[in-house]
Length: 164
Image (cartoon, one colour):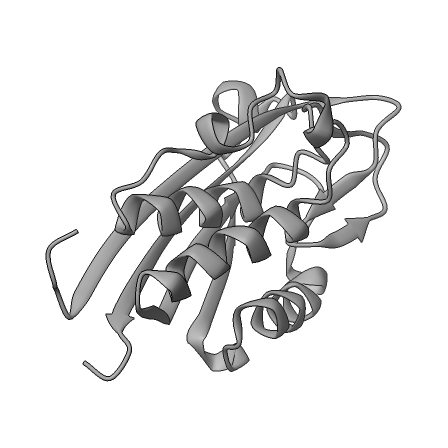
């Protein structure tokens, strides 16, 4: 990787809502009648952040690094996967300057859980909560998100070279 002082990455994820699963977003278990379907805990926000970090480093995506064909990642805690990816960021000589994210869900309301999400993410990534933006959006009852069939997330990260 060429020496650069800053690197930007973008991440995206979407998971289908199903009955019989816990709804975990940003490391927070949110009381809701459905949860997200996935090989791991399907934490859509953390997955988007992971992909943004990997993208900034020009590395493989989350599905390549933690494939759904590998039983080691069955029902995996996405926060553990995030920590592993953050270790890669540090090994490459970078730290996270800031993270900006969107959670797009018609239901449930995310706002009450955002402060806890920020606290959890900040503790794992060595950030201040003021360096993490989590916004909640709806799709105004349009498409699969608006029909309450899925939840998606977007993330953008700015990495800065350590000592840069």
